[in-house]
Image 1 (tube, rainbow over the protein chains, first blue to last red):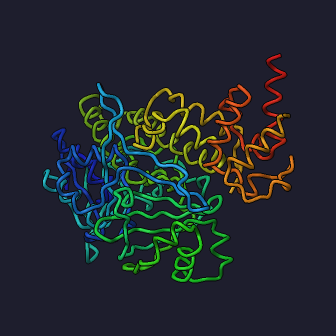
Image 2 (cartoon, each protein chain N blue to C red):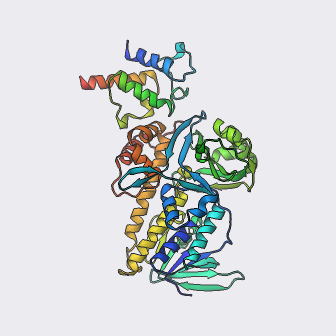
Image 3 (tube, each protein chain N blue to C red):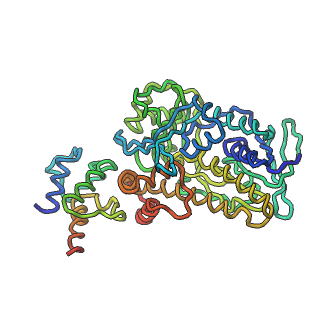
Length: 411
Length: 84
């Protein structure tokens, strides 16, 4: 099989890349081993991802999910620590209220994949086995179909959107996978029905409840009465509890934070309880001759501010533009052709890393910056506008104080 | 009224403080006691800036500057000296 771009993975990163490639008139093949719909943990989307969804013509189909107008962080005593409204930046009006969504990933991912197929993208149900490399240039991938038949897909570019499988890193084409700063953490999560929401609209927003440093929970309504709830703690704390995952999450829902306990009383579990540990990692040199990794295929941060889908979709859209540019200008095998793309993606990831660091290391400065001193800058950051070449004054102030407070814990 | 007395009175009367006034010593760790958290910090900064006519700089927003009555007094009085 021949194509211009072979994409490993049919999640939001792969589908977004493919849909935007199609817009450039570039054909692509998505290789996805799972049959959709398949479970992924329910997630909140940034305002920028909301803009991509609207751009892809999917706003109407999103009515099945919960609308998000803000993200709300609740401190250890059950009091709201801060809320950040979802705002877009209008060229004339400046910051204006907008909405984005919180989604059941099974349905959301399927919708995006179907949209890519509607745009003419081929979706192959097979497992990517290994990249094809000739003279140091990635030229395609070998895939294995059900029953074991192997097939080569020749391509000018391979986009790795394989998520935590990190397909190209596993094949040794990137730099070595490094553990991230928050690697010794564990997340225990499931989906629940029976959530009760206050009559006020804000209750359906994403809530983050925290108890102490690196010990927190997400509560993300996903539409109807369903909600995604997960507990993140240091791995040692989970191990020392001596509990199984079901008992652990049930107890944490009662004990972690009074605000969470109140909202969890009516919940009934509708999914298995999942556990993921050591989830934070970073892969340097994630682009090269003939390949680009997007989203989790090269980096995964502490998930507290829910940027996972953001990074993979925004980087996917950007990858499509970068590929279109290089195909008409030098070709994807040119050394360093994706260096600038890589640099810009890292700007965004590094800024969100600074946000996470600041939140844990110095919650006082973080709160004052968000609500008093750099409110517009932080509104932009939480909406996903994190790719400025020059850090905004708010980012600069945060980084200055992060240096002074590095590694500290206060709760 | 001294800087420490003024800060003590503010904490006792304005913050949601479960500690009896008699136990509000200069060295009591207000963050550990959860008297000062990331919500109370807004009132604390507003009070210090208006009461003592100072500006708390971005890089001074470190918990150790608000960890006790004495720490806050040092921050305030240090600024007085620098300006005089």
